[in-house]
Length: 253
Ligand code: PEP
Image (cartoon, rainbow, N blue to C red):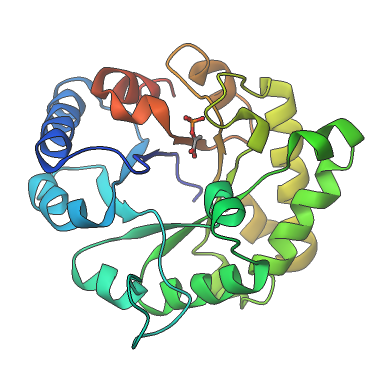
């Protein structure tokens, strides 16, 4: 069954104290107000993973993830964090291929494919990001461009492994800009990606893949986006740093 997921990407924000406060507020609001089926995945900076996981404890429907992992298994790679280390500290999910990683850290499709495989080998659920630039959207080639990112990053996986993947479609022009894709634009791309998955892995796997939308999603636009049949949740940046906004987005289903 396709899961409904709202994942928060804290990016490089939140001190220890701030992260603990934000998590506690989210947990309290979720307990008091949320009875829906959507789950929350918090993706803080690495040092928060263990303490945030401890705070989450046995809370229902709240999970912990990382924003990145290394494409190497282990060894002399100063500053890197492996999928194995993340899993040992309790991470359950990992964002792979965020456009900021692709752009600022020059992460190639090949690197991302390696990261996905290591994440899966260590029991982490990859949230695989894809999305087009404004230039590509304006040229009208966004659909083949984003499909290609999926092909290169994921289509080497076995059907069993692919069925563990979560996809996040994030048009780069909508990330952190306040400019959201319209619900029709999001639906069109999500449906195209689902067809692309079906062409490789078959209809069942495609139907069961969660495809999240990311890009200036907020409590005001979440309901309309999540109402679309192929939008299974959101990857939330800015609004995930405010407990009220984040929980209201989760409640938008
Ligand atoms: C993101 O960084 O994944 C994101 C969607 O950011 P924002 O919600 O701030 O646009």
